[in-house]
Amino acid sequence: MKKLIIWDFDGVIADTEKLWIQVWRDTLKEQRNFVLTPQQEFEILVGVADKDKRERLEKYFPNLNLDADFMQKITDGEIYMGTHFMKAIPGVEAIFADTRFAHCIATGATKIQHAWKMTQLDWMENYMSKADFFTSDMVPHGKPAPDLFLLAAKTENYPHQNCIVIGDSLNDFAAAKAAGIDCIAFVGAEGNNTSAYRQKCMDAGVLTVCATMNELHRFLSDWLQK
Image 1: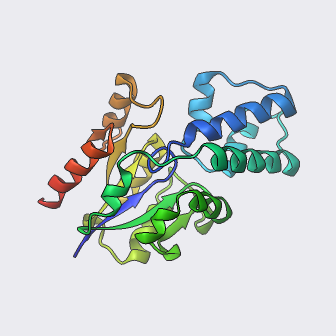
Image 2: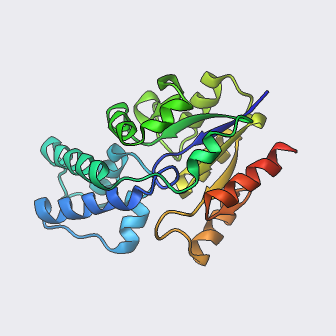
């Protein structure tokens, strides 16, 4: 049996997390005259679906009303940024082309969001079908709950010991751990490859931390032998 790689998308396959944070930063400022600190952005906005971002912001800041009109502006901004600036992480396609692995994506995006992202990275259709995409609106609870990774492994019909998650956020690592699936931290996206964040990844229980796709591919090849 092949090994199944369960990929996160944002910050792993494409360096997009910075784009989405910029959209939230600009929209909060323009629509609500509201500014988060860099630490608040990291704690509230990184690694979770838009609906969870909204819930977190309204929980932490009760006077902040993020209505449907606001969320539509977020969606419009994300589509614009993704269409104009989204690019695949260099070297990622080589891993997808490695026939020793099967692949699926478990993303915090919704089905609609992921559909337009895929139009920008249409090469991925060479390695997966739409049935291999798992989105946050397919499960009751998004990351850091294990639901999404559990759904991916079950649907793909792979036992957990033959799966590995590749993520970039602490929520990815927590969700993988809760699902009983090994996880690799990828820190090649802009701003992630710092000694402090690498240590947080290791503290979260990942197998290793990789900063490039070449490094990740080598580790995956070694992992196959275990």
